[in-house]
Structure formats: C-alpha cells, structure tokens
Image (cartoon, rainbow, N blue to C red; front, side, top):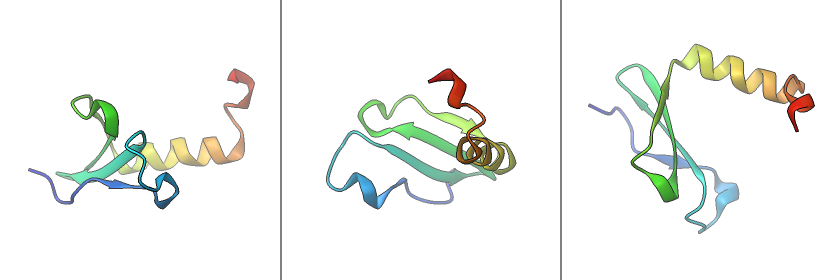
Length: 63
C-alpha cells in the first residue's frame, strides 16, 4: 500500500525521462519514469545519508 503518488522534480518539466519518488509503508521508493516497473526501496534515513554524501562530494572520485 502506498502513502503518496509518484512525484518528480519540477526541473524535469514535461520530460518522461526522470527520477520519481514516493513514500510507501514507511519506506521511500525511487524509480525512473521510463522503466517504472523497476523500483528501488530504501529507508528515509538511508536516502537522507545518500543525498548528504552526494551534496558533500563524497562520490565525486567515481565520476
């Protein structure tokens, strides 16, 4: 059971090729809009830690 509808960034505009996110049963789900059947499910804490690491540049050496 999902708590919310899929949401995408306003930066995506009308593009169908974007990341979408929603809350579901206390977890966070992520998917690409063009492959909607593949869903990554994680905890809000883990997603927050990933976003913090991305913003801090912790993964820049992989680029």
